[in-house]
Image (tube, rainbow over all chains, first blue to last red):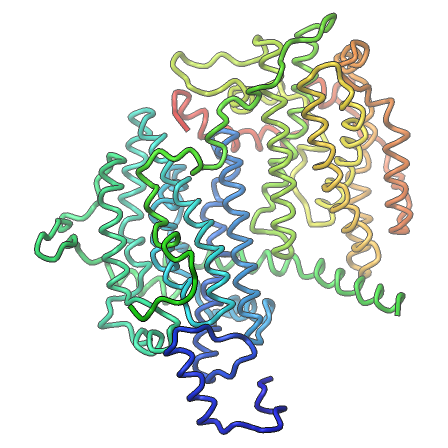
Length: 321
Length: 312
């Protein structure tokens, strides 16, 4: 419900819109009770939901290695990390709820294939080094994407992102620390790290989305202050930051076109396989079906538990009323 | 720039990468305590037999390690996000207990630790977790069963934590400083685990017909392993006699009194399912387990065993 229906001095739609635009122009936050254009609300719900779903689906590829973590310390680190992702999902679903849509509704939209999650999680995790690589490159790319969102125009989303970013940064360091430890180990471990980086480098670059020329929603999202940088700007930033990290780690990045461009002050680099990216978006990536089936089964297996909790709660309410 | 909103911590966020190449001791959880028993007095109390203390610590540690592993298998599969997070907490607490107890066992008697290939950097607690065969594990059989539905998880965590908490309340008085310290910390954790499971036990019992039926079935499934928890193994008897351990037979009354309160609140009677036999009288504490433990360990140990000289 919006205030426009109850306020005695009902402002005209134009006046409300002018106020909204002025708030955006001042770089102030829009809050849940403020008037907002329907398109803004819809865009936010789509983006926050996609982000929340990504956290929840993202539990699976790393969760795949909890049972096989090779030391008690690594097992604790990984379990705690995957738990943090569940926590991020909670914050983000809560932020979406301030826009009038429930966690259950969003989950059902995901399961019906009507909302997306980040395509990176449709890649399989094939060795323990992937746990480190996901921390370093995937969480690293996520941070690049998400740090600007701490300043996004919608208040609850921006505040959730501040917490998420702090924890993601921690995860990224843990991942990088695992890789540096493995690189100090045996030849087999070093080969495992390199193989993992070879597999995840291009998918990590895809995480910033298609090139700006092919990203139809970017302009409106930037005008509304939901998005703060273009896909290509963020991708460049990520590449520039990753190169010295790869060097310090002692791995090579699998891109023959990757070279420092003195004139631009940035690295030049090749393009990921956008056709493979689109296959993932269309649902045909290597693990799309598996990830969705896992999520669907968890949701369905839990249905009787959630029903029991509701039944018990309503009986308690009845007893005390 | 106009896109600076009034969030003062912006620079901090933008520098998420800044510390990556810097040696910053704060940056990775757990990396600052390589030795889990650092700073604790690990002297074996006078009159206590080192090998007895070691095997006793292994028993308590293996219970925690195996139970933690089973609970961790719920990750990303729980009925709701809140429960996913709660179950991870329980698993993490037990994993922490396991790490300390296995380290204690190794310190008390180094001969319990498997010999690894020369040059292996694995600390003793990892050698114990990842390089023992299933018959060397001393956990109770309740901990090792394959997971079932959420009712089964609820009942298992309830039975396990009611029993373990009753022991640990007394273990706080252990003459062994390490066991006393581990128990003092663990009592708070186990009380949370017990309350979490008890709350769900009552909710499922009083929820829907289906949830009640599933709960009662889970109780019948696990009840046959309840008596085993209170058997006194000779090592437990010796540990209790020397003042470092607790005789589980001595806590049965207290544990059942607590359990009966939960059953009463749920209006569920005790199960009448009979006790499960062992093999030639041997059960979990003797190293005689059911089939699921071997499969569980095959998975859990696979990476560590493939890289015995690996650094993790």
